[in-house]
Length: 355
Image (cartoon, rainbow, N blue to C red):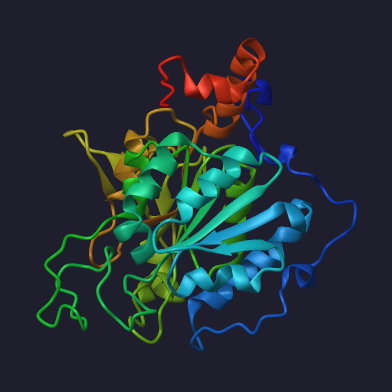
């Protein structure tokens, strides 16, 4: 969703306009590497890869100015399959490495691919600080509620009671909600989509690409080997009609086969799903993805329960705030112009010479 209210780049904002465009028309084939794709047959990662390779040409960017950074996990093989620059980094550290790239190379479009284990366990600290800093990078978080690469241990998003190889009596951990976590870290763009919904997936990815700042996209992804059917109700044609809430900015939050369900603020200040009637129709919440206060977006992220009934997908939040990397570049320009020497400024005056 293009924004018409974005401040000028000179005020500390950065968008894709700084990344060189190509004059050569590109196709999906141009973004496919010569590497054999190695995921388990039926893995949701295949659908995500195909969607990304399909929409990247639409951005019109030079391939040599696109970088994919990953950590460790099944999803982290992604850079091998994209015919762009890429880094397969270390466990949980992809956001930190991507931050360095984005902050020092404004001519790059930087993307992070990570999983629920990689991002939310060992990488949790790096993730939340990239989000709060609003570094200009895009983070795709594949969530299959399991550790797939290491053969089926419970992950930070596994539900309570989950029986896995590492929790034979059932998990005791309360799971993270990635969207809630991102909103709590003041991320400027937060969205959720599904691996199997190509149209919706591409729409969300395109909106993330156009956002100036950190964009986090949680992608519900199926691991058919170690956690098959984790999101089945949301993928089933009939079940999804009743369970999926498709958020659209400026539209009433209604869903169901006949739009008979809606989200409304209750007298106690919370929000919940109600059956829409002529009496309460005017009270149904209208989604505002651009609201500065993330309170309602956070409340929406808390709607689903273990049954996955009433699960919102789409863009929860999309607000504009100065990006860390653009602000840093501006600060350096101002100070090096006056001091004349960046190294001298960094060393400061409190130094000693030891003979």
